[in-house]
Length: 143
Image (cartoon, rainbow, N blue to C red; front, side, top):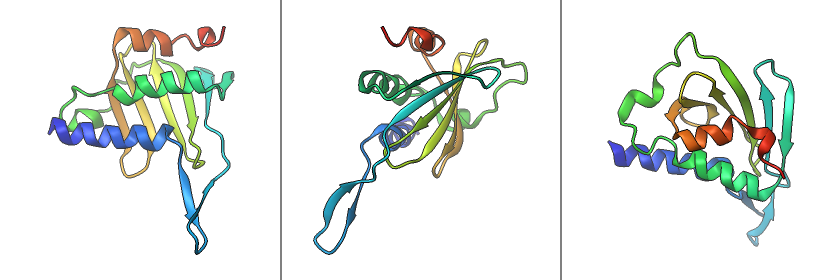
């Protein structure tokens, strides 16, 4: 079961933060869809506090989120967040393919929640303290 979950999470990471492209025409020419990867960050009141297209930040974000939940088994990823969970930040990640995935980081829950994931819907994944600390302080991302 762990291996299956790891494969699903790996596919998600590739979908969310990879350089998606399409093949068009009879010659199979390769062409980017033209949308830039971007992360927008909103506070608990849904006020935008940060927006970036910086590749280094997007890579670090992808590394942290892509490795989340590697140790989670089975249906635990579909568990609901506790009713008393307090949203710290809402992230909207735009892929090069133009897909948007919503991610929530909480003040009092050491998990992230990802919504709008193709084929999966909503999942909940644990993060390490280091990863959570980084995600809970987007104001420190750019020097």
